[in-house]
Length: 385
Ligand SMILES: [Zn+2]
Image 1 (tube, helix red, strand yellow):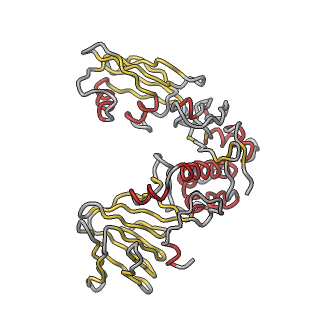
Image 2 (cartoon, helix red, strand yellow):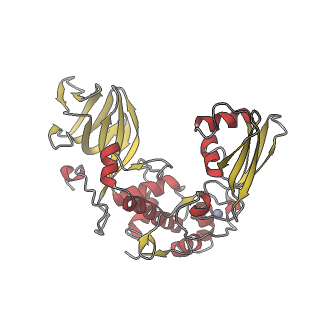
Image 3 (tube, helix red, strand yellow):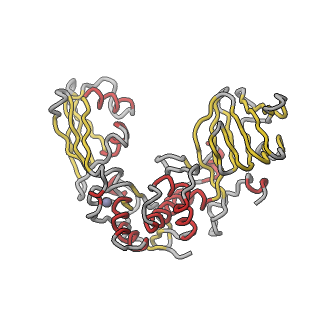
């Protein structure tokens, strides 16, 4: 692929054409102050097409955004070589490093305020899937888990692309996917051969219902039984649920969290789930899923006596997804924190779809990726390539 082709977005999301080389845009985080760009054959251009830099061999540049345009300075000579026409720059090159961080794709820089910019990676679709799988799984896990994860991640991504006006979203924000759990974790920095192999060997395969690709949610550890998205979030696909015997092999299968009422209240107020005038008096689970997940939690205000209902997942979001590790918890008054509660729970993640720790157990017992996927998504079919 030429450098020019690599940075020309081809967002044919609605088509049924092969997607392997289609570029997708992923937000990689914020950059501050002067941005350092080092690499070989560096090309920088305005999105409209004007070439700003056409580097030969190894070179390094300092890029600074003044609030409306980018100034590009060659580092060795100190000479300013170009100024962009607007907020966005696109670039490509070999062995690139941005602020010392390796970047294995072409990219976009979107200036925000003076000295603040978003870095967006422009990555071929299947390379994106490999980057998601590599970010999700420890590299020594069985290949069959990687393959199952690749198919789930691909389905999740394609369902979002098919369900959203990709061009409109990208035009508005400058990227389509977040590289975090709000879409899918993405890590293109490591050499995760097994992830690349799994994406390649399952390329194009997806989970479907009646021929339509389904948003195949997945998570770390179900704690013994999964629930469907429709149960966990009150909406979403119905792909079935599964029991798991293997999850307790997770060394962190059981967990405990102590929080004071003050901390819980502040976290819920920060998310605007509770009003500012509020004094948390008690917290209890009022409904549970078949698997035992806390679907709704009542929090009572000592001032008015009123009770507010919070969903289990919103409570996790407020307290931190890695702190309140799942909604498969019991809650009681804390012995160590007189004005607080103790959560004791199992599992990690929302608990719907593929369970990574359970999939690992299935793979270690000899199951292939097809059996793993039909275990966690019993109502879905796997398309062939
Ligand atoms: Zn599980």
